[in-house]
Amino acid sequence: MTWLPSGLRGRLVITFLLVAVTASTVVTGLGYQIVRRGLLDRAERGAVADVRETLSRTTLPIGVSDVVWPSDTTVTEDDLGQVVHALEAPERTVIVTYGRLLRTSPGFEFTIADVPRRLREQAAGRLVHQRVLLRRRPWLIVATQIQRETGQGVVRPTGLTAYVFVPLSEEDAVLSRLRTALAQAGGITLVLALTLALLSARRVLLPVRRLGAAARALGSGDLHVRLPVRGRDELAELTATFNETAAALEETVGELRTLESMSRRFVADVSHELRTPLTAMTAVTDMLSEDAENLPDDAGEAVRIVVREIGRLRVLVEHLIEISRLDAGAARLHRETVDVGDALADCLEVRGWADKVKLTVPVGLTFSLDIRRFDVIVANLVGNALNHGAPPVVVTARVRVRPDASRGLEVTVRDHGKGIPEHALPHVFERFYKAGADRARSVGSGLGLAIARANAELHDGSVTAERREPGILFRLWIPTP
Image 1 (tube, rainbow, N blue to C red):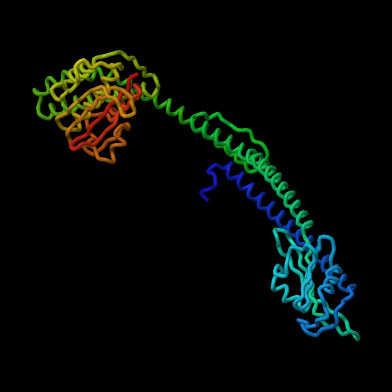
Image 2 (cartoon, one colour):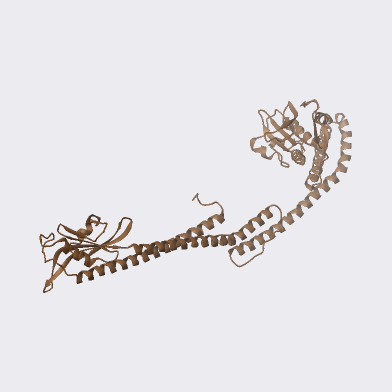
C-alpha cells in the first residue's frame, strides 16, 4: 500500500483513524437505517390505518357495480367530490376515479399520471401503498379500490378507486436533523479518534525513539548509554535487553581496547628495542659487504643474504615504529609552505632514485604541508612502483580544482608494469596485504602503503590506486588547508 506514510507514527495514526471511522460509520449507518425504517414504517401504518378507518365510515353515493370500469351514468363528479372530501385531511390530498370520471382535492398539484403504474394496477384488488419523491418532496401514496358489503357478508367492488397522497415532510425533517446530528457526532468522533491516535502513537513510539537514539549513541562510541526501564510490557523487556546488550558490549570493547593498547605498546617497545642491535648489525654488515667479493662463493652469497635481510628488517622496524605512532594518535602535523618540486626532487635524490623516475612539476609550485610526512608518502608510493612495477615511473604534481569546487595538491605516481589485479585494488592500502604470490618475499614491509594513506589522512587528504594499461597509478590528494 504505497499511499500509506513510511513512518511508523503515520501508519499507526492512519490505522487507528481507519478503524475508528469504519466503526463509527457502521454504527451510525445502522442506527440511522433502523431509526429511518421505524419512523417511516410508523408513518405508513398510521396513514394506511387512517385511510382504512375513514373508508369504513364513508357513505358511498354509488351503487354496487361488478365491473372495473363502470358505465353508471348516474354518478357525477359531485358524488366523487363527497368521497374526496371524506378522505381529505390537513396536508393530505386525494384523487378519486370512477371509470372516466376523476376528482381531486382543490388546488392539488398532482395528477393521476404521478401515481406509479404498478401501484395503479395493484390497487384493483387490495389496499396498497408506496413511497415516492414528487416535486423534490417525499410522499406516501395509499391506493385502494373502494368496496361495499351487500349483505350476508358479500363484498363487491364499487368501481371507485381512491389515491391518497400523505406528505412525509415532517418525517423527512426529523431524518434530516438526525443526519445532521450524526454527522456532527461523526466529526467529534473523528477529532477524538485523531487525538487518541496521536497520544497513543506518542506513548508507543516514545520508547522506540529513545531506543533508536540510544542505539545511534552506542554506534557512535558512547558505550555508557543506558535507558530507564518502565513498566512490564514488551517495550520494557526490549529496553532491558538493550541495556544488557550495551553492558556486554561495553565490557567486550573495553577488553578489546585493553588488548589493543597492550599490543600497540608491545610492538612499539619491541621496535624500539630492536633499533639498537639493528644499528650495530647494520654497521657490521656494511663492513662485511665491502669484503664479500673477496670471500669464497658460498661465504660471499651468505653475506649478501644477511645484508639484504638485515636491510629488510631495518625497514620493517622503522615502519612499525611509525605505524605505532599513528595508531597511538601521537602523530602531529607541522605545516609549512614548501616548494613542491624541490621536495619531490630531494625525496628521490636522497634515496638514489633520481635517475630512475621522471619528475614533472610546474616551476614555482608551492603548497602548505608537513614536509616530513609528505616525503614519507611519496617515498612509499615511488618505492612501491620501483619494486613492483616497471619503468618508466612518472611522478607529476599540480594544483587542481575538483568538480565539487575543492582545491588542493594532486600528486600522481605511475608505473608501466603488469599492474594490480582488480580484486586486489580495494585492499592494497591494508597492512601486510600482498597483491600477489610474487610479492610475498619482496623487500617491502607490507606497511608502506598503509603508512602513506595514514599520513595523507593526517593532511585531510586521500590516496587511491587506479588501474592503467599498462601499470598502476597512485593518486595523492591533499586539500588546501
